[in-house]
Image (cartoon, rainbow, N blue to C red):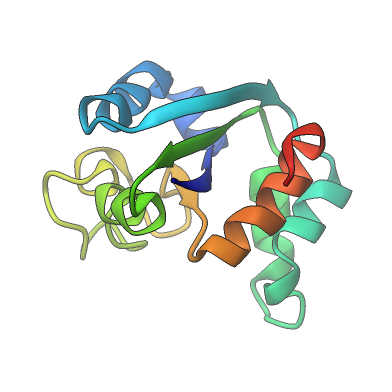
Length: 136
């Protein structure tokens, strides 16, 4: 059984889409095993996005993630990393398939509602950031 981290970003929380998005994961048969609401600190956001530290959009990512509350989840299931990323859709909602979360709800590439780990290794690193007591 794999685990992945999912973040419902501030735009999803502000637009009151948490329940609708969670239902999509659950309807796929995935298990939400941990959930917490928090307003991320700058430190958490910087550590989370560390691989983008040297990119010109890094400060925008951090500012966006820290502007409001996020809903952080751990989701478990078979091939969950790949499955969740497919459910989420392409980062750019203009390129996301219509039935995906981003295809249905996202307004722009910058405000695309959700984050999901891109590998099992990334998931474990990110789970340790957002759920320090639940890291393996």
